[in-house]
Image (cartoon, rainbow, N blue to C red; front, top):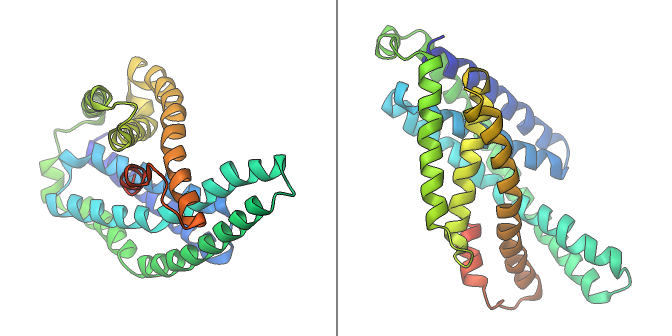
Length: 261
């Protein structure tokens, strides 16, 4: 299979998944829908990066910009969902009669509903544009002889391991740069690891075992640890917002939390 044909298939699958989740978000308000949308967008962004060398430059730039915009639209709601479910609710389970915790929870829920309204409005616009444009790109890509000739020699079996190897090298560099106290670099390391993980998941059938299942298991374990660090920083920032006070590490937490994955 040509790498170009693989991108068309994976790109179409990703766009359909995103469209279904956008419909679900308009029908109901459930935290899982926001999470699944962000995961679907991350997968498609990883696919776009992996197949970047065989895509027309203008198309690649358009997809990167559009998917980044979509990821950012849902990021703030997801932050509040995680904060409420993993920080406030466990504390309330331990101290259900605590009036301060109850008040903080009420503020968090109110702010979460407010940012969700903004998100839904942004996503409604996204369904009208640019989602149809991305679908059109795939149609034109498959029927464009010039694109087919440019990628004719890129076969998936050889192309995929090279791209995973490049992503792995990038992640190793990010790991060397990440320090426990530097949340911004830790966040970059986490995002790089996620991209590599999703690239592997998309290309698993054509990857050697060492690049597939083995590396994937390591990435999953690593993400749990990195996720706890970043989620802790976000929780401190949101708690400070709820209390209308500045936490001591709020500036560093803000920088790490506002980088969209």
